[in-house]
Image (cartoon, rainbow, N blue to C red; front, side):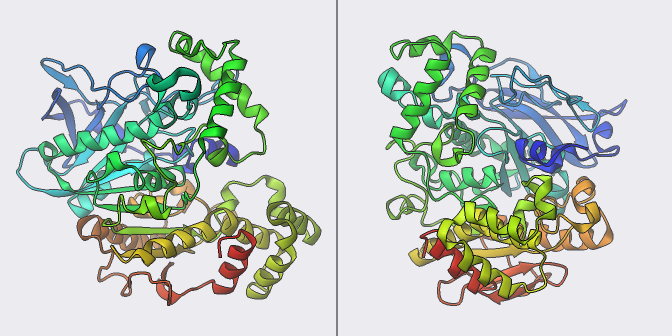
Length: 539
């Protein structure tokens, strides 16, 4: 079985999930094709059980050669009809020194692999050219800023499109060294946006949606961006980008809190290390555009070895506050003015870290748990452990570790973002806490990182290796996906299937606790939140 670390590397366990029959039906012996117009030419998709599916539509030119480390450029226009029947390349992300063991397929559909011609997107829509204006749900994939793809089976948008009469878009973009290496100190103004190239790709894709989605049955004025983990961090970063203003109208951050990005000094040091690994002088930045991509990727992985144990979200190869593309850290008071009118929904799961920990974490004794929490929180560890122990008196040491580590990495900053955003008073904020526990692996994963994705996408059967795919999960998916659809349509997640979900405020902190019997609680883990905020200097 694939390891947890492999799941994390690809951003979601869903990449490994089996899908029976769904994809093969898209390529039946006598498929029904559909054609749509884009600003660059016509594309041909396929009708799959009433949903029109277009894959691998280019929204940007190849990022190789002279386009490497540059802002995205428009794709070349084409004549005739271009097939959009298969997924396009994922961004380069593999270590050339490590043989790939994957069968390079998504449930029976061969993938084209990785490549710099990766600025492609996928569309699922109930209809093309019918004049309807449907909400658009624009998904940013997980995997940090280093790995992942919009082609994962769990991101298939057919069920959402059919269920909610919405248009679903997933996107690929530059990642890691090719998407987030700030070279301005060495290459000057020509490389002034290299540190945020991957985010600028997503902005380019949102512009494509603005200009083209009406031809796919979507409303360019009702666009919701949503993402999980690294995808949630991308959503948070987009909220701080002036170039993205007006391109989306609601936002959802799922277990992806971004409060602080890379600063320019740190980004420059990381870029310098990369040049050194490639035996390039600081004056030879342009040579990076001529090197084989495999050589750059190999050097990138060498730099990562030197950075072992350092949080890459703030230490390099992730978005930088460059004063231009990203003027301020997300949710900084000055950055908030960019998107104060955008309703925000955000939340986290109860035990995120069960999907991101080593095997030994599942059998920790008291001393082992305390040692790990000490490494996370330093001198604050004993007090935090006492608070969590009081709130969870029957929890074994390993579970207590998962609860504390999950809140340290995800829960505490998510709740701080909700507070800061709600305090602005410009647009509603809705907070959730996902506590449903998966039965897979004997239930030991509890509420892991990524667990809410198949419920939001109504894909619990596709993602049965994560959810179990049983009737309980199916029933909860009905309620959760309807809430996400409602938020996309109106900016309010309330439906008749869940209790009334009030907007978050810093006084009462109402939170939707999502489980088989979902309920709204005021500040459901108050004591733990306060202790963790103090430990992290977030109070």
